[in-house]
Image (cartoon, rainbow, N blue to C red; front, side, top):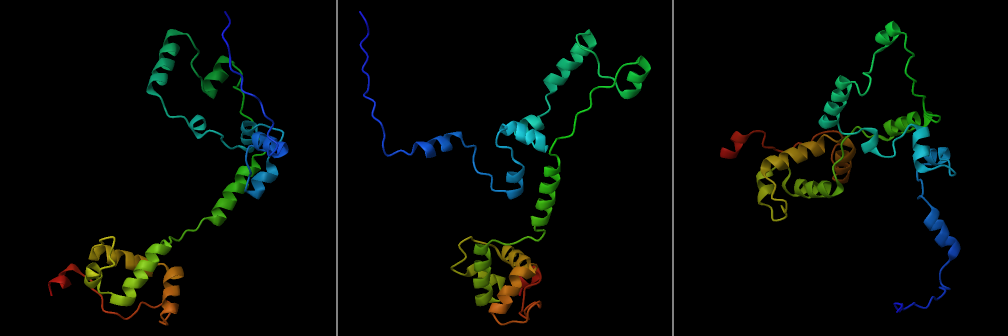
Length: 208
């Protein structure tokens, strides 16, 4: 007796764009970087493209985690004569052996240099505070100046910052001229100069 199978009726989906669907399935994703997109070969695989550019597709394979077990197993095979020990250039010259094959440079190795140069140009050496933190510090400075004790007791101290944290964050804010000068201009204060406000400079002043 044969097993009866229920076959679902197949219906053609008229609302699907087959051309777009095939492109989506066969696409490997859009490359946003213009230089990398220019050097990318569409007819080659992803791994081949990365290898020819001198890049790594999988970081775990390119820089593998050292394994103590594999090192011990390799040493045991060398001692027992299963594999030959790796020789340096002097030992090979004495024994008259050929030099090991030298790894060829990537075909499109200049891509790595261009990406490194581009990254160094885009890198911002100066630290920037988040906009939310700048907004909070601006509020506390406008209301309490450099009175950190009043900042701690303020009802808008949602982060429960201590007076030391307030002092650290505000000093960090003042050390970034690109952000602090904007605040000075908004408050119509001298740009590039620390405001002449009274500030607690040491822990001993809290006992006063």
